[in-house]
Length: 116
Image (tube, rainbow, N blue to C red; front, side):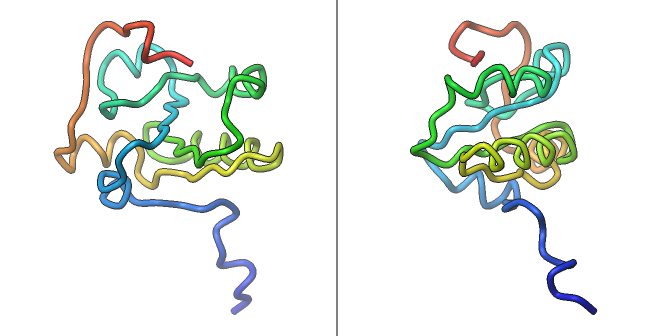
């Protein structure tokens, strides 16, 4: 087996590990209607298609944790961000895993502070 092929293309973190980190930037790359339904508490909405347009507004001096529904779109976003000099980490299992694990969530209308 080739070890290089087994390595993830982006850094990954479990929802359990993420829940133990305070003061972190979590970007949710799902669509707005998904974000309204349920979101990890403290996550900021930045739909995947808007990521390329938002590079100038994202911090390059801190780690960015990227979450979606299950981890697929967030992996795509991480690959793109890392290619452009960011330090991003994919959240394995995404919001589905976060919510089913019982971690704190928000639901309903989005306030301005929750959008990037």
